[in-house]
Length: 312
Image 1 (cartoon, rainbow, N blue to C red):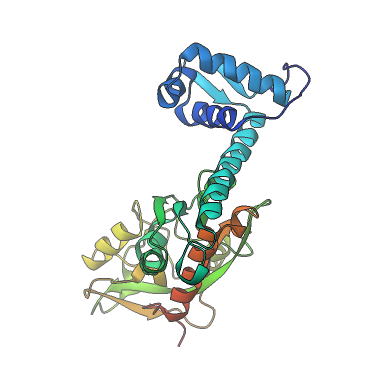
Image 2: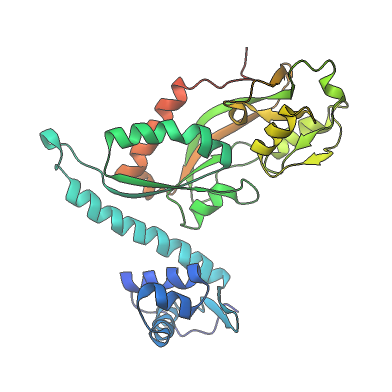
């Protein structure tokens, strides 16, 4: 149900935005009340006022808590971004001209969402450089499975400021967000070092591995069997291959610091690639913290070694 509230009227206060976000995050009025330091009845009363101002029912109430309606999910995403912009307003105003020689300083939280291999191998050098240049920025990284909406979806929902995502023709930047490519990496055949016939081994795979474009390439290769071993993530795949129990087709980033017991074989000029980039909202793209992270990502991208599977 998404109708039933009275005609809209009035702006939401920051406290009302926080209440809206807390109810969604905690899944109910009582749990949100505990987080906000309010009573359950106060949260319920506040939510009725919020829905009256917005003009639509935002949560479905039930025995098991409160679940956002489609309108509520959209409202929560906007509320999360507005609260982040309010945080940035204060932090950037306080930091204006506060550094050496009148330079601006950057402080405050920076919420980053990334899929596993990006969090392990792409983000760390960028975060190290960011900490050196802007020690006042306090980043947090949440690892998100790059399945369905993935990291871009977390940014669209307002739960992260920046997402490191697989983007490209088969995974476009979602509507309402902006982004750019950081690197393009090649896939390679990964197998136990020294194996005389790696293509005879069982195929090991994991759900996040490939985009629809890469899957199309796979379907055209008659030598690739259906996956007979399914793993949770690329780290588990590497362990299985390193132990001699299978082969895999993996992107270069997943092969960073791969064990010496594995080897890679180039898949030829038609080999598939994976494009990795960042996504953020247009408003947050203008904040100093997000801009600083993007600069460091671009800088470390230009110097990183892609490892096995890179173009010859």
